[in-house]
Length: 363
Ligand SMILES: Cc1ncc(COP(=O)(O)O)c(C=O)c1O
Image (cartoon, rainbow, N blue to C red; front, side):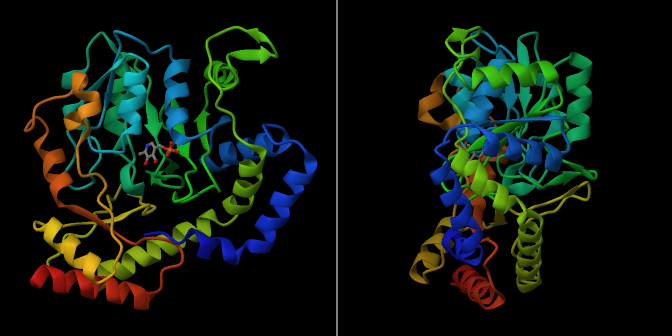
């Protein structure tokens, strides 16, 4: 599905030199590498502040902690995403309130959102799934009118745009994952929160180091969620390539689109309001599981993101809803299939992948 080693080999000298420099420096946690990389990400996303943390999951958790979210609070989000969003809401004692998705973009449907907002709604977490922005304007309108902060889960969407603006700087905070397979991937776990709000930035900076500004003086409850200097130094190198890699992903997506043209396969929809960064290239198939099985035999990697919607997950059953509650999500979970998508794909590989899918669909 991804080729992290192939990508590393192309920039091996730069990465190796940067890693060695950090190892020899003896400064492994926070420090200059981290603050410089935070500034670069803030600039890239177009926001004032960026606070490094240990993962995208932690970014979501500390963002909610900075808003003081806890028991009795409700957080409006999507049931069609990776578990981290719901997991962190539940972990803080709050309740996820789901809104079904738009069938074309797979993102939260803003037209269904207002109906679920109550006096207990403390945040809205839209997820820019697969690398495509949520339709943010209607969502921002509702949030501003009700005075509810938005936390953008941009874990899959660094570099994606909404109406010419980078995602992450549209809401109150944006949460980034640098998980190795992400569009900007570290050599391990890493994450970041971005914001324009100085007070939230100050709070976040404390939360990620045990709620402390001065060592051994703990002002608020925090966690240990720091960004390693090594990851920051290596991500700094990779960030210089991100736009080029996004371009490569978008080109690979157009090649897939061209190869599937006329076949009747439903390819990803790119909304006119944004720029998709194709973290995933996801097609839709009525007989998905049969096709997936045939792909295994043809040695074509694939992924199903995500087979079980969050409202049906056993772990969060207290916040769950019966099957049938979110029909658009449930149908997508049965039909989506993501094909290999990364910066090292070539057209020959894509031809083989598409041919394999088409044969599997026919048989
Ligand atoms: C949409 C989404 N949210 C949150 C996360 C969590 O990020 P991490 O794996 O860095 O904790 C991920 C990635 O795995 C993700 O895809």
